[in-house]
Length: 250
Image 1 (cartoon, rainbow, N blue to C red):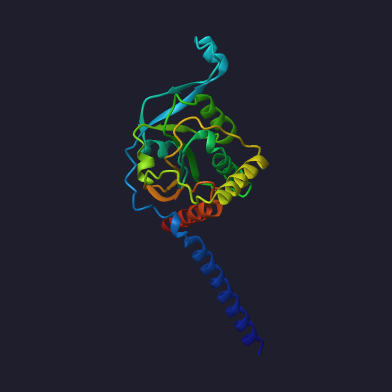
Image 2: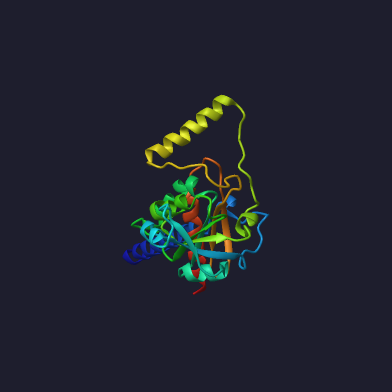
């Protein structure tokens, strides 16, 4: 009798463990459909990217730029493959494709905060950013990297990332003046609570997004939704999926 009870308990525990492992596997395998690469996607591995650096105000003054504004220093052009290799982790890398630095501060901070979390949800992934222009609001760009997105930045010389994401233009979801006012008010309230402000300098119509790479190339992408916050849970789901795939291969 005791042996039968012990056997039943042991079998039940094994079954329970199997169910837990299966549930964890399913959870790690789930990726929200909207995070799949869009139909517009094209290979960005050879995209021409120029690494950007910023001289301090004192350096610009010493260098003869007496207006005190930051100067962007671009080094020799590289490619996405090289950028992901340089800034990638064990499992891959995440590229933030910026629509306009002064208006993407909330998204930049969200990614920075996610990377800094104690539970390390992005462990094994590097992060870098891509912008479409320089020389328009260099001060805002420098502020963006210093205060909101403290990761390497590159200029997409041919807007390859933006084209791969569909070259989607900023759209208005409704022409109802009351809904428009309410939507804009809610956005400003949200940004105000986070102590985030911005400006309208530079091209801001072509939207960006977030591209997630594994060790072989681009795997998933989030296309920016006007006025919406970054889908943190969806990004974590993608990262877990890629990490789980890699761990199963090893």
